[in-house]
Image (cartoon, rainbow, N blue to C red; front, side, top):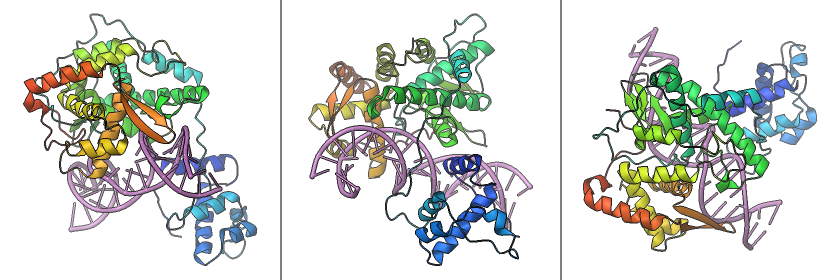
Length: 404
DNA sequence: AGACTCTTCTGTGATCTATT
DNA sequence: AATAGATCACAGAAGAGTCT
């Protein structure tokens, strides 16, 4: 009998596992076998309705009963759904939509994570933060998938607390799993809070954080917000480094003075645990980040200036904004890349309260936040002083650069 | 009910790199 | 050289909200 090994996405695997746990299938093998029979039946011209009518449950029970020929009786509605969904191309609407009910996070898990994220008093045994390297690569754009800044706060706090407890700055490889686990627990918890409060899309606290049981989202969190290391030992810093809040020193991840100060700022989520907080970052935290962008993140400052200036000129719809600013980004960027980049910038500006999204029906328009004039004034002055830093030429995109 | 706009973020597949 | 595993860019699915 041939042996097949296949890769399944986490989502698909969990969906199958759920059916197994409900007792609807005996083994993964029987599920996949039934799925294969159903697909073959479809290929022979049977309709999903016919497959349902003939039924399938108990295929394994009967499978070996007739001279090794498997009973081709798919029965359940799940099978019909799968059969439809696995045809070559999606032609119509999905047969079923996976439920998105939030995973409940156990109280003791939450308590443990908040303990690990609690503000700590740093004593003599705590390692000192570093200064931002003067020669760090400041030309890189923050990647568009960095669409929230609270995950950066979480990473800074985690590093501050961990380093105080351990007495040293950790190596990335030693802590990335634990940090991602804790971020996913917080993400799932905030998702629960969002659901309880019926928060709308722009108001959700959990956006940008990974979720428990979703390894892809954990990978995304680490690679976009913290850093990614290759088997060859190379480290590609994420947004936490691009924002000048952390730095790699001999493959240990070290908070900068600014990163430590940001970590220690009171958080409505991590400290107050305020379920009703309207935003994941407090006004103090966003003010801190705005100052940080203005003083130490030239490429981000310039990108933000481009967007805000366009909105100030009246380009307040997504299409107007895109048309206006696309030419100001690297020429080799495809439209998709530019859209991703602009989308991320708009989302970060909204979290920093420099931009507001106003929904009129299904259309959105952008409005300037209260402190934009001040931001633009400082930003333009700095751009004029450091024109080399402000140049947006052919820099690499996102976090794809090597550390010093 | 279906279409539509916009945002978020996962999954895909080509390509690169490491290991055997 | 062959194979396995990792990485990357980005397409497009999914979700939310609303309109027709």
